[in-house]
Length: 223
Image (cartoon, rainbow, N blue to C red; front, side, top):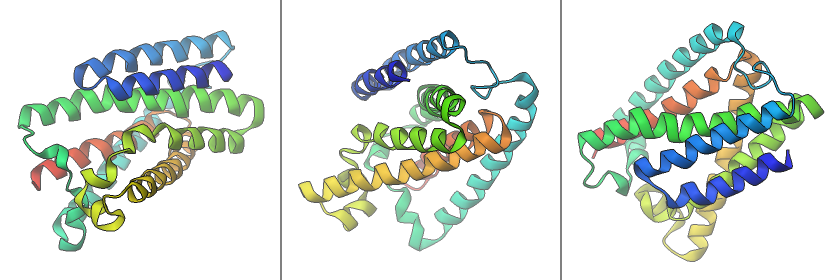
């Protein structure tokens, strides 16, 4: 497990600096490395959530969750009180081609596959084999929250809705980062539970992709 965490720390630092298509390189490399570490530790496809017998069930979960997120986001976009939550300065100047690149390539490959393999696949599988599902969920979710420290450094000023809450001071930025870590750690618990209940990594992958990709789509359309 120590080697897995070391790989995650190194990849987090690199992926924070490499953006766009260049960011796919470390994402793919770390996925391959982690799977290699997992196999060398005796892990199986079932342990990582990719057993052939569970893929169909996982795909059904993923489709249902994608539809659920779509309904929630549609309601959020239509309600004036929640519409501002989709605002983000990253949409300034974004065109349709860049949106499609993010939704269909960068998010699924650079974010969803890499993070789900790392946290709900390899890390969850290693800890679950040694200590059980509760420990696996706790460790995976905590590290998943910490994984989002660097991406959240400018969150308070990037999203107008959060700027209104936290302000643009150093203290506000720190509170925004802490909130992001706690929120993503809680999301990690949900992803782990989906992984456990479905028996497949495809279920959390579907929810993860829906939350990120549809978030980009709705935010772009509401500019």
